[in-house]
Length: 134
Picture (cartoon, helix red, strand yellow):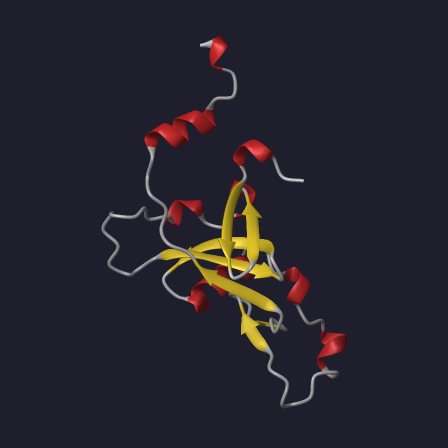
């Protein structure tokens, strides 16, 4: 179970997604709401039937998927060489990540999130658990 003090929840399409900072693939790419964002970078929530797999900041879904694969967040969808022959030619296989490996992402769900607002107070409060030691 994830640490309840740092857990974020998002309600969307009948699901309540829960995630924490360990689910964020590339936090340094975060662009907060209201900041200059010429490439429209935004957070993408990748999930499997409501279970958050990764949060990725990217300008498009393809880049988000590639980033998640390269961060080893999508290994459950990787198609091994021995299983590739089980996929008929009409089956859709996605080749993702820097290595262009085959993935079956048919059950993967995607939610395009809004960019978060920057809040110094929220970041500060989340940084300290025991203020009596200050």
